[in-house]
Image: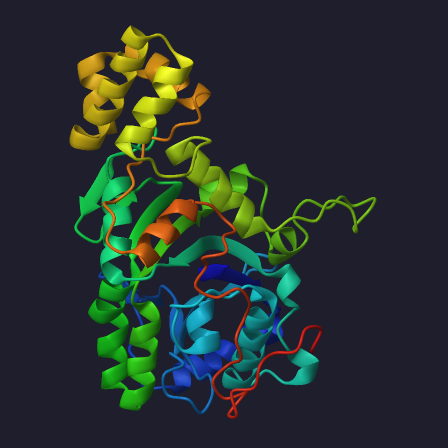
Length: 384
């Protein structure tokens, strides 16, 4: 469940020479510095575009490399969306990102004319500079997805400034960022225009847009400082996350899942459901004496009306954290359930939790690449 990745691929001298010659052979402009005294022109980097395959909506892949080679310090740097490479869009989740990275390696070797004897190193050795871990829930309607997002806007993220917009809420930092957003408006603002410009068949574009309706997405962007902090350096570190060198088969865990679980708990606490005001009152009255229960109901309602951050300022930090502990003890979250719309939506809300993994995920397994399955046959479990 990775989306955008930035990787640094170690190069040997022969590979570097081949790539730079190819770059200078093209008619693309390259960024450079001019020394006004000596007149020397120094290139900061060389870059270009790598072709993917015959499908036009598989976006071109940007790459760059420094013009000067230094042994064990020179890399081919590539940044791209792995689902867009695999599917042509990132509405659906990509679980087996190793397949996508290996596909990227094939495309890079072909585009940069690196033959088998001089091919790029295996993906396990690629260094990670950025990782976007993501998940997406599919709601019965776009309106319900909007209402759930609006409920989440009342919460604050510890020690981060929130950026609240109509269809998104983001908490941005230098080491990592965390956000929730609706996929359909984001798709219409960005991908839709790009796909139409690339003359993708309208029926394909419409199918992508239909998939995006009702999708609420969560995303954690991990930058290099954060990856260094958690000791994740290479692709191998996430493919073998949780295993030990002495026993490679022990304890293997899903890296994106654990990352998202951590950030969601930090944002929402342990209780990731949604609450009705009458049920909140009933449970608190059952657990606490009337005066304390009434105070906690007032605190809960205040958060729904004015937000988590405002509640901390008004109630004071000591009272604020004490109230949150008491609500946690009662198993109550600070997220209000949207008003009932119809039986289908109410049944969905009664079961839905803001958790990863979820039975309400947009896709439970990887789908075929569009060009690999023209008959749209179902994937067989265990199939290569």
